[in-house]
Length: 64
Image 1 (tube, rainbow, N blue to C red):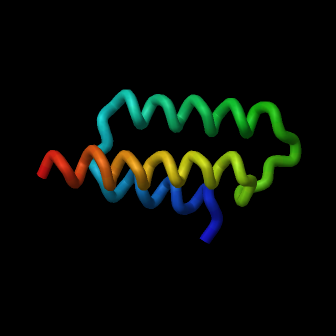
Image 2: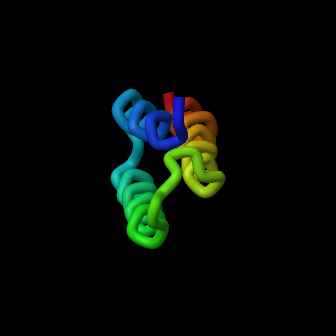
């Protein structure tokens, strides 16, 4: 699974706050606009995956 696929999976599976979704979309969009050709497994994209996983772990699960 690529970082891009993992981001899509996390965003579709969990109910993230809109601010988190907008942030990740902005960051990934900026990445794809500035890297030609773009690598769906770039470390920067994996950083976004870790961010989503941390929000899930420390924000979403704690509010349940």
